[in-house]
Length: 390
Image (cartoon, rainbow, N blue to C red; front, side):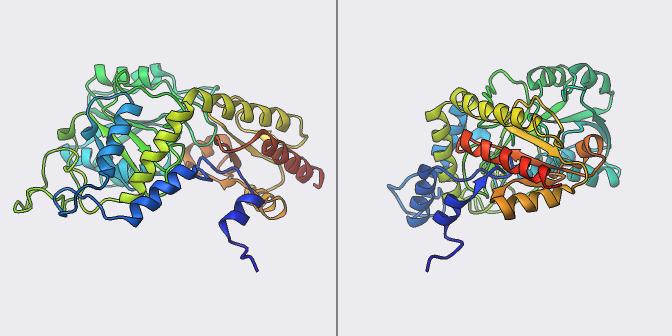
């Protein structure tokens, strides 16, 4: 008898619409790369005498540099995910500052930004300004300029929101930060793989990405691009395979921030995921995914009882409520009765939900290139049926 949790059975029986959390299914090339890396010995510089096997770290760094249009592959540091990257950058920057300082961020931020900042705020290390969006869900660069103070040292900005899908003008925002000599971190967890990103033209000091979302890698992979390593203190220390006699963490990149044995299979999968995105082309990905989400939103607008948080997203997601129903109940019914997988609740973004939903949350549908227009029609039909039953 076939088991209910057989991956092939699951893939054929569900509509997966929770890609802003983790994309699924993964491309066959990604799964093959993970398997190949896990099955073979690893070329781990300084830690093995194995030769003539793939150097997954170097190859994936090279792909990242090409993908984001930068020159130096060693400017890319591998971490476990975007949350890991943001913690290393935020706490590493704070460690370099001798006294209290001011930080600017936005209402759109994820808990991976909110919680590290709160930790610093409650211990008196920082003061914080949170910039709200305008009515269109956009952070006005003039508001960023207006929030600057003499003691402002750090700005952290989400590139694309995970609740309403608006995209911020990080080129202009980072220009403002650069002119004021303020360190800027861009959270690209929701944008990398969905939006063309040219880091040769964006003046951010650090750009954070994750592997398991729209770069189609597996969970446990991510990293950041860093222009000036000496501005971030390495808050982790450990083995790097080089200069092992020294008790001091190496200053060279990327060893300055990469302590311990890396996730070789995951990094190999990340490299394959980037290649998959490049082979299709981000423009082609955008055309399909934005076409699907626009079609779905149009169908939802025609359903009596559906309240959409933002009707003009710039990434393929839409969040909605049904008055009188708890978002968690909606998500449960869609999963149990219709085998549609969404995300309900606050989406780890409580600040923006406090403004848009009074903290009550919403149901989010997020699509990837792997979804189809037929699935979108089935999602709309299921939501319509749910509303009609009320």
